Image 1 (cartoon, one colour):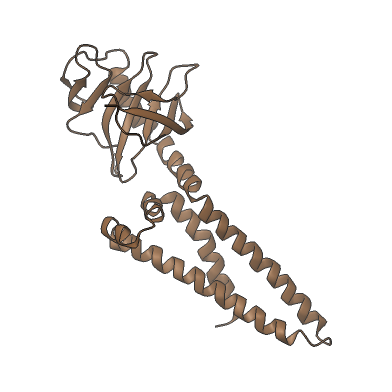
Image 2 (cartoon, rainbow, N blue to C red):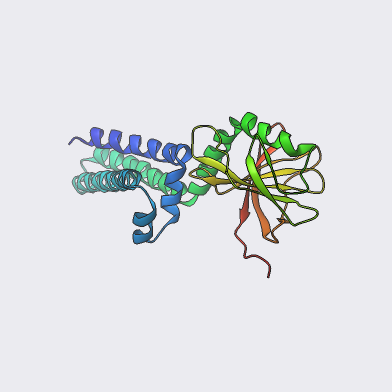
Length: 246
């Protein structure tokens, strides 16, 4: 295979891989599982296979480019081949730059995935708003049922701040569900997300209010990790995992 063709394959892989991380939430879960057996047991075969093939192609093409560059460098040792030597040096700088990009993707893959998720949820604000508006001015005080979410259980008893949804509603066609709803003293509505593209929170906050750490109605602490606006008073929020208070 010609060097130009190898470069094309590698550059396409370099561009496609971070885009895939941003678009497909399953890729992030694969990258977070460093243990091979765990990844195999919890990830579908198609995505895991595609991830493995992409990684192998990137590694093999990069090694091939290095090997060809070293081969040309040996020829450039002859002082009469200064042009070839200069070309090898340029290729070395390019390869170092490519490696730096791969290192950046590996280091900041969570940020790439987070920005992709932010874009996806920005397009779902209407669906989130349809659910939150049901409770914004009419927060229930007991167990009950609403058309937007189905039956729920309210905690703690007496003055509930958490609704545990018994039939988690789905957001759009992607497998994203709302498993619980929290209401803060300032009127903010927090929707706990589960499913393939879940694991975080979508929160509506009134003016001059932003996401912050809180303790839920089930005495479960949530320490704020990051939050980003997705428009119309809504935020996509991630909390660090904490153990319930005993």
